[in-house]
Length: 425
Image (cartoon, rainbow, N blue to C red):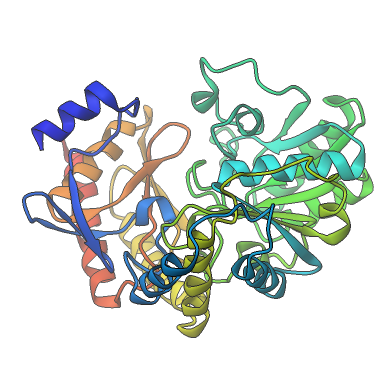
């Protein structure tokens, strides 16, 4: 372990202060093992990626078969059957009239492609995003990210982005009702159109659940109102499902909870069970607005990653993992919200499906030190979780969707004890 950490420090440009002191040797299903052979229950899924679990047999079999036939040829220079098949299946399962997919390698690339499509289709150049939102770490996607901590020291970014309020209750307004939260957020969106832009807004981009923002779930009425406002100003609606897609929130895609049809949807993370792949799915007329060669990716739609995605999607549907995520998420939310009422230091427990956040803080404000300590206590007890939120004070619980109820209940017990230990010092 010491040598690996030394090599990381010497040769890997990770620059990630919160990297776990854990050298992973192998993984299977919902488990990871370190170099010393210690077993961990993975409740973070590689940041919400392995929805089907690590090294699922169906995915591994599909990848092995694909490796025997074709690894790379560039899927935008030649016709590749697997790419056509995945694009067709995405058109079938995504909401509304989303039809054509552009394949890339990551979520940030998927968002960049969405920005290009929106500009090309509308002839406009500006965007509105949400405060606390997160869309990637490229210069273009950081421009859309409403998190000062993520943007610090990296600017200037792509111009022409305005920010609207995230629909959450503010500490300064503790008595606000959900309806009032929605009205204030929608008014802020209207003001962004009116006063923060030149009137040339190509699209509004939103996450249906804000992951990096601290697992923030908008009220049910909010996203339909965003759709109405965007339509009134002639702007498209981009829904960023990079973290929420493929069953994570209890539906195949989180936007389905809100009954809203996006113009463009961005996908990655859970799409291929650990293989690098991103997808930007758009209405046909929007996708077709890009000229020949105007946007391309050398490795986008790589046949091996696409084969993994096809097998992953087949298993998610066969096992009905969105329903499983809804059921296990409801169990966790009920338990954790009851537990939080008697646990000092827990401000709120919130989430949707198997995407759950535990926000920690006291009268002095957010307590990121408690979150880091709780994660360490959980790891020492054999359970891996994440930490997020703009202030770094939110524990993120995002296990593989295939986690058994017995393992999930054990993990929740460990997490509760870890929070208690962190808060008590």
